[in-house]
Image (cartoon, rainbow, N blue to C red; front, side, top):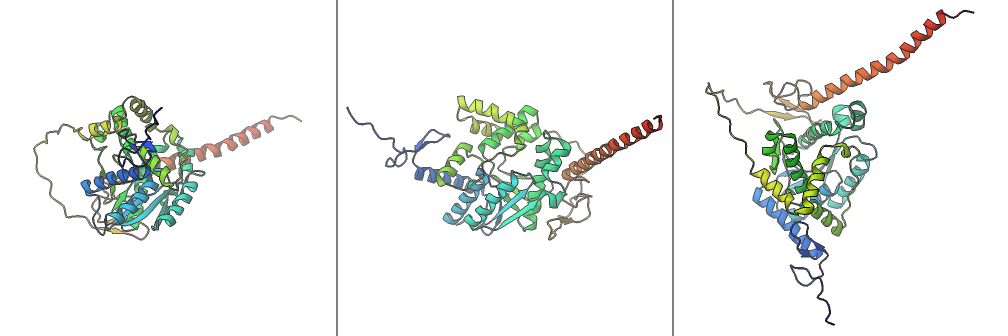
Length: 363
């Protein structure tokens, strides 16, 4: 009986294959997989011109698999291809007991492993609220709404404090495809048009955010972390199961089981989605104003010229009089005040009732 042909790597045809790539079902050995995966990310970086020599770049580090693999690969590629960028780890402490405190311990180990500076910015210091306090006040279902707005601003403030104008995050192809589906399900055509951009900016912010993992499958990131034996935190956020994103994720996974290429197909569809341009009404042209000067204070706050482009409450860059974060925080303060009034009213009612009963007692 003839011996079986060994399960060889389809790239080098020498080593034993240890995986079948989810993206194209190609059989690869570990070393070939590392090379192919890293090269694809390098080509994305080069094609999109994400970095320039001498640039300071902050890696949004949560301690999870995506940001840990991102830090590891950017360090490798920066040295291999001589990007000449200065990498810094930037972490946000949302204040979620039993989750973020443990993940930050992983980030601190990553700091030592990758020899990168680390900056940690906390919600408590910036907003005087932790996520646990926000959830206790507003409920679990709205937690991602609050966290999304506050986290984006916290990342910007942390980057500004470090004198950095570029933050890279570990958002992968699965995340991008989920975002496209979420915007479709919500009928949010305005966001749908820009949801697949590899580089984005918040309105009024000088900080740009890039996603080098835009075309990387989540499964392949997990495989890379596994075979590289990287140190990462794998527990899901305490409040994540209530997020609407979970609905899009389940839908996408069902599609992927039938058509493995659906993740990239959804991204490509999103890239080609364009809104019909609205006709501009005739009228006088607005005068072009001078470029605004910004001053980054030592605490990360922003000082601008007084021309209506900063939040009246916190001084942060905003196209409105009050930024989104302050609007949310105002709502929380009102909710907390109502809860305190209600809590104080309970013993008062009991005291009045007791006095009434005492007056009608007969001895």
